[in-house]
Length: 238
Image (cartoon, rainbow, N blue to C red; front, side):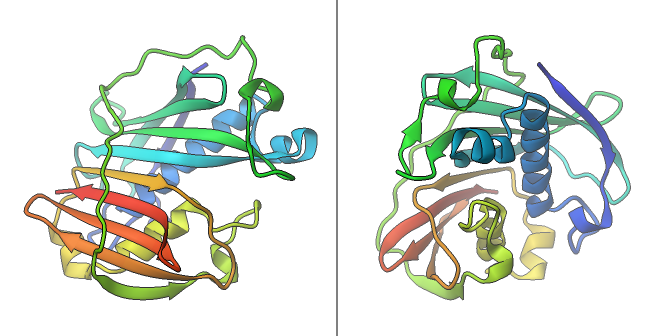
């Protein structure tokens, strides 16, 4: 199944440069995936109410090919690109109405048991053999990166509006924490070409997270930690 949705860059998706922001891109990706999974009856609410489980993003990598301006039309395509016993990849492509690729994302996700917090087999949360994997449109691979002892640049507290229906910090809120360490000028002038986020642990309301960052010639690396335990790692390529 390929889920398709026509939309425009709304005001809430746009950044200070009047274009679809990086945070807006990740929001489009999350919405496309959750809506597709809703069509397949394997969404988060179904997992919670029917299977006593919840979905989590493990990794998310996005390639950005060009900017979209406010009110510009685009089409998103969302589909499962890989399945194993316990994890699956979901790809999201955004194109102009003329077919020009704007961005491409791949998300690795799995389901956790609410009671035990252990990974569940996909077959136990409604993912069956009829849900076939489609061929990817772009060659996009997750990378392994591990940076330690990065300097702390900020401290943030997880607040009530950062929490999602699984009662942990929503993945988009981590992105907001990380992107907020950049100035408006940097976000307007530095074109993000590629970005990967790895979610290693959960955080919850009132947790205090240390934001660590290092700038390298072609990329920035950001790590969010809770009491020296990595929560989220991010690599941004310019």
